[in-house]
Length: 351
Length: 230
Image: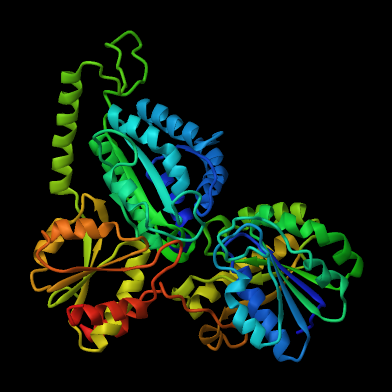
């Protein structure tokens, strides 16, 4: 068995990226994700990779765009306000169909907000952020081990579908330390015949661009992209069921909120309440199938570190046929197991 | 165990400095000493000395921490009263230094006075299960960077090798060879090994400093408990 090591969530992302073959990191420091850049700064020069602290978030995402166009496995990382700055680049990357990995270790917002953990960039990650018709694959780790495994998975999905994978973590998972193992992951390398690698006068030159001035051409491009998105929705949704077999109350939570929720579910089970947890691992595509399987559930509770964003997708997934309650804290606060337990008891009473 | 008036805990980030500093301060207080603990960590915004504020207060320990610690203001400023720890020689002082060389720069401000008094221990906290301090070579590199930034050389090693909640007796036994080699390479004595108190009890014959660790709300439920419920 591979060795157990103790890592911070942010370090696990960086190490996993290197193991996934990423040799190009462009970023700009911001709390609470700076350890990713720090780790890359230490490691990349030793393995022939590139670490570059750009002059801004906008510059760094455009460096990602350039390196991705050249066929490299490339990434950037930031936290909420920094991701807003990268939004233009995310849209250009989507419009050019190049693969990239973007990490958002969320902090409280809006605006400059705070530096404590948050999940209030759910809309930004899953519904847009940048302009135009586009999607990103959004992966939500709930442990340091998953910070690593979903980073490797994220690179793979990005290359496979030629689009951005976003790791949507939060400050606590970024900062906390847990023992993890790096199994020898099988890394798939994808042919990239579209990449700008130099023609050597042997082939027609490639173009990477998001500018389509003829509306019919742009429409066709968007239709094609959405066919790809439909395929992803069909094949790539991931989630974890926890005590769902006989659950009458279903708690829905991702990332750090799901860890607190698990404690609350265990406490409620000890009181004899039939409650379970659905933990979405992909936020886009949202795991609708998990909700179809939860046919015994009478009510759902969305537990979030936001004013209630994922709850809209829970309502859509349940086709608004069952009550969906919200249990939330925001601004950098985390709901306690007791708060969630109270919410579970209320849901049992139909409140 | 001999106690210097000032004890400085520095090391790689995530090596466990804060946990050890808090537990060591509590230990000194239990022996009836007058203790002040200073959080000089200007690097890490999460999981700080201030998280143990209530416990420290109850033990009569004075806590000096940056005004903005645990708030939403990410301002790397040190409180002026930190200097009292160096200047007022009537009690014991424990200093929790930020991680790596960047964290250790804050110590440079006090280095001259600390060395002049010459009643201190500068402890290098190390966990060999951390990826950037898993070889002696890498560890010595980080050590030298910290010393250069802090303006003080280390006087001893604290072996805090652990795997978080998965730490067992063997985790610590396995680290002894690494720490021995680190000690020989650097010429520094191993001041103590540390372990969570239930693990420490299983380590007879080793100078182990037992520690209480805080439980957090996002620690996962005990799998034995949940398995029983299913």
